[in-house]
Length: 409
Image (tube, rainbow, N blue to C red; front, top):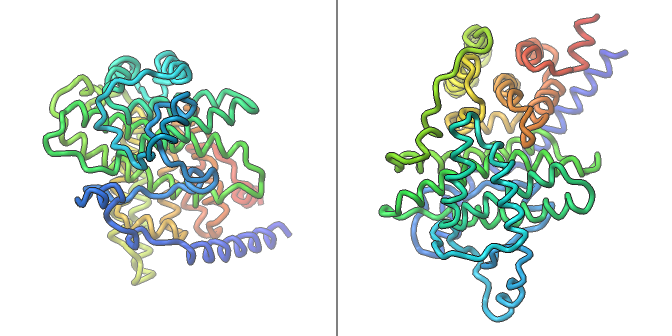
């Protein structure tokens, strides 16, 4: 009886995901130039920001104003006396502004608590606690990013109406902070401006995972989005942010942020099983190529090779915050399409990547993202494929009822 229910559940899931994939809009069909750059008649070096439904649809679109704070007493008068500036160039604004009391609360929370969310060691802690806030006094976009993540952190520990207010504050600041990231930096931009861009991208990556994690706790069962659909949106946005981050790093020569680029070599903390795991995935990739002439062998090879590097760093005791999100940037864009189509072997590879996310579970902004993704993958995969995710299950301790029931049988 249990086996029949399992097959029926799996069949229904495959039909559902097939219908979902038909409705998806391919990234390559989008425009390659952002609206900010169209207004200025120049080409952007970055593609348009990918959408995140939970931020862009559920709460309504937010148009940033020139006000410093969503609760600033000057916001209403400035909007009534002049036309609102729809997309201010946040990162290039050098004017000093008087912070609202609410902003002071958020900045104080950052400097005492939230900065630890970004750091992986004592050296980087000092940078995120002091250097980055000082830099944000000269670059509005970075300051708004700091305030957004600080508000989100407070929302994670608040209840009822205070939680909702902090979430709304976080969302509005996030929208303002992101507004300037699609604008191509001038070739002669000061290095401090590039540093601010780098720091803001790091903060926004953490914010994206954290917002979905915290906001989902208020969803009813029927309002909960598909876990993989939401993760793929987060994944695309992370990939976009990392692309800007990488471009920023290439233009930063020497600065106080250097320890963030070159962390100290860690000591191994666990037996290195990653090479055996990667060899198993590569072997399976070759088998799939022999079984199916349409199998995208090279795409999988690339994704597995980059995964090998990330897992190797994890096994050597590396701080996951440093390298966890590079995989999203390095894998081919076509591999993301295979994931969105729920191709079984692509999901198997993703399940192995989830082990890295699982090692960030103690961070308030990551939480159980890893387990939720792995459970969804286990629910989608045909039993014949589930044997290929045994290592991620063992490494994370994730409970998958169908697999466990099959083992007991």
